[in-house]
Image (cartoon, rainbow, N blue to C red; front, side):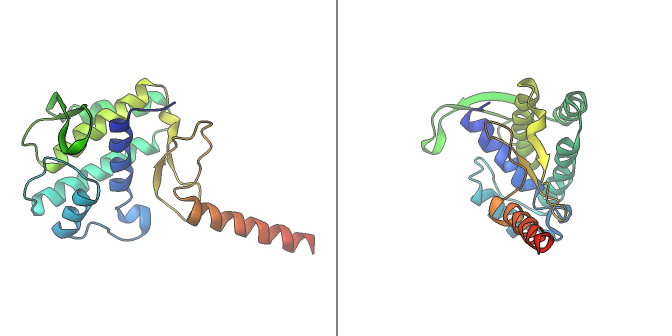
Length: 184
């Protein structure tokens, strides 16, 4: 199952936002407004004006609600959480082709604060995942000491780790060493 570029982009932002929380990495990755601005710039989030402490508080609150969606076990639970999330949004779908990107849809209202922008576009991307009956692709990393989330976009739904170079490799090396110990 492949999703459109803009849905994948929004899902990537959702994952990266959730993974800034202390529950994911053990430390707050959005400690101040400057870090929030860097997040916005790094993820090429358009139509974002001046940010302040209120924006930071609202984004952190949204982050916790988004994480709940990744922890849902059934399609029904996922759908209920996405519906609850979207019930807080002012949807204003419109076509846009800004910054050299082809036509795509923005769902947030013009002038929306950052948290509402993230809630609306991220919530719609998550809704597309549910509609495609692919909620199982929303996961928490399988590494026992990792709390990061991921969206498995692999063809065979085989992605288990947030990053194969760190979590996946670390667990494979540990399993290899255990096998070697057991063999000797």
